[in-house]
Amino acid sequence: MKMTDETDQSLIDALLEDVAQHPVAPIDAVLMARLVEDADRLVPRPEPVAGAIAATGWRGVLDLMGGWPAMGGLVAAGVVGLWIGLAPPDLVDDAVAGLLGGTVAVDLTGLGDSLGMEG
Image 1: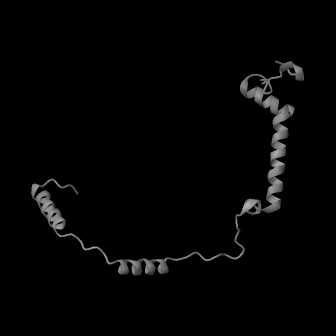
Image 2: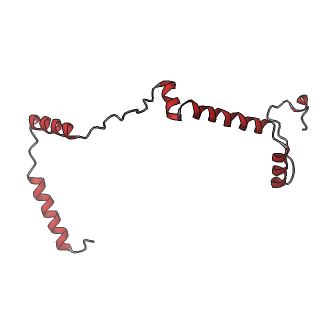
C-alpha cells in the first residue's frame, strides 16, 4: 500500500512529533531483572538424548563418522581411489583416450625421464 496522499504524510508526521515529545520512562532495573529471569526460566532447553554422540576429540569424530565399520569403508575407498589414480587399469586409459582424443602424460614430479616416463 503506497502513501501518496499529502494528508496521510502530514498525519504521520504529526504522530511522530507527538511520540517524540513524550519520552518513554525507562524500565526499573529490578523489573528488568525479573523479566530476564522469567524469560530465561521459560526458554525450552533441549534434553539429552539417550545414546547421543559426544563429539569430543578423535573419539567424537570417529563416532560422528559412524564408528569403525564406516572408517574401514572410508579407508578402503581412499586406498582404492589412490591405487586407481596412480596405476590406472587399461580400461580407464582407453576411456580417457576416447574422451580426450588421445592419451595424456603429465609429469607431476618434475623428474621427467629419470623415472622412465614418456615426456
